[in-house]
Image (cartoon, rainbow, N blue to C red; front, side):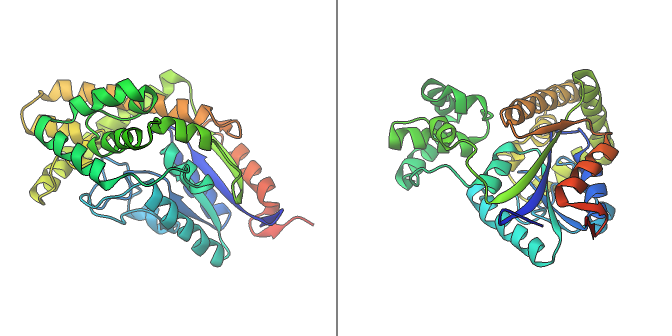
Length: 317
């Protein structure tokens, strides 16, 4: 598994609803692999349906890492994901297995493969001041200030994601430079791994149809009940993960802010828009190889060639 002294790993990414789970399970089973989730929502316990988390059967088919590791009210960011994800990869290598990094959170994938951009730690006093302003006046005024000083970062952050809004504005206030500038300068630097990157895609109509059907299935599986249970457990709708797609929509219905039919349409629309943003992120990576989710045979052959195998576990002569 060594090439130029670098250990090999495979990335399977793509927009929500495209079919990453099914393909990655087949690949991991075929090539003695383990899966490291690169999904910023699947790290949270008790949030299963709305995050499309692998079910118990799927989790038992292949060893998984970085799923169900924190409670919804526990702070978590890309820096912690980088540390814990790298540790998971080393554990997988130690077991003589192949790591498959699977997910749709582009920034988490980038952090895991290349490290984080070089910026000074944010002044905690600035964070505290902005947090107090948010508590007093809401997050909207702070978000508008971020739009003015760093529109690129603001375009990637939902207005209700107070944690990321505050952090991005704090970076600007402390350094005088937008956070997006730090991220752009970091770029895709050399990775310590030998990486095969496969991004799944489909034509827009087919993808949007999959997303619409997935939303219907999540609702049928009990998404509303899952969110009600989280509230009963004491988790506030103001928490960062509770502001995610699906969870904030169900909260709007629970608290009579929007009727049911409109909520479902908004949930489908927002999920489609999210998928579009994910694709925009992945298209920036020139190393990405694009394949349809049903191109299983071709992807299998590509991975086999990358790993230098002719059959499962049998190296080429």
